[in-house]
Image 1 (cartoon, rainbow, N blue to C red):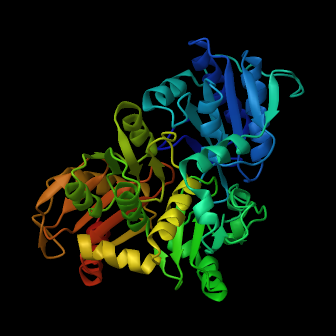
Image 2 (image 1 turned 45 degrees about the vertical axis):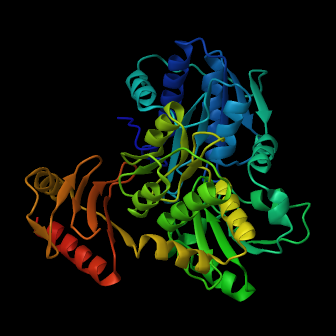
Image 3 (image 1 turned 180 degrees about the horizontal axis):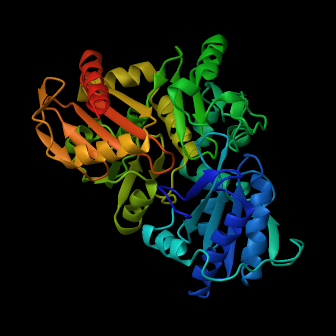
Length: 464
């Protein structure tokens, strides 16, 4: 059965994600768009194994359904395709990518005409349409209905309009940029090609469908090479993107990893204090309590959603949202598209360094002075079907009175099960929407408390 998760449909290449299943999904999308007399769609693809061929096959099906298809002529990032959909006035977008998932996965993300993740109602309807009608396809992709295009120029021009790239370009910053062999390669160089003062050193920029043996996710365990290079080059900052360029990872000048919660909080402060922007803030269920404190300080409304940027996208479309993001490093911004954008996140971080004249370490000390210490961790665990069933039963039952020696003061089940443990500590148990994993998230005011909370979490699931 073809199922859409937190962001699109994904599967293992040759197992779930096959050309046959891709044609079925593309036909369902064609049927869905045909209900509204849609005429145009953009298709992009990342650097994964067979991505270009998957994209062309999807284009053949959609073109056979009467749509004009703008097919990217090179690997591109998801935000570039999303912005092209909105800027060009297209009816939908398709991105062939499995984002940060392991190399054996591929996937298909669907974008609405507004340039953001398809609404849950849209993907649910497309799921229902899968397999209903016979697949239509063209005998050859060489047809006027499939038009090659490159979304990069209009996308990069948009970023230049949002961020002062001239100030950044004249800042003499030294940056090590790691796209983790993904489709974000070359983008930062392109933005600053005409600036001589700034130095961008790109690593892992070549195409490698195995992603150098790591998952293309910009989290600490995958960024050892970036850390080493930042220190060796005496760079001011290291920036990483995930496989399709919509998530960011950051390393400071000493080679320390700056987690996504810290990046989110720093950018919120930058947008409010330096840019004087306003609007509400959206965070997903697994994201830091630092944002609660900052929103209280600035008098900003804070929304909390299930995990998946499609829920944040919905609020961007309905409300005046300043910034929205998730613990995975995906952030979206006001005045752009309702979409995660790793490159724009990076540019705002560079702008913050430039206008403040401070290092990341100094900025983090200021943040901690303001909101207190926050230590965060995420652990992914493979469970058997039997263990999964038992854990779900346990989580849906009455919560324990205490956890790790702390009273359980509150329980939320927005997405998974989250125990609040007094003193600004919490632990969240949630099953992944894109992989067969249990994810455990936690936050505490000290490393020692966080260790105790995670020890209790392992004992909690170990007694199944």
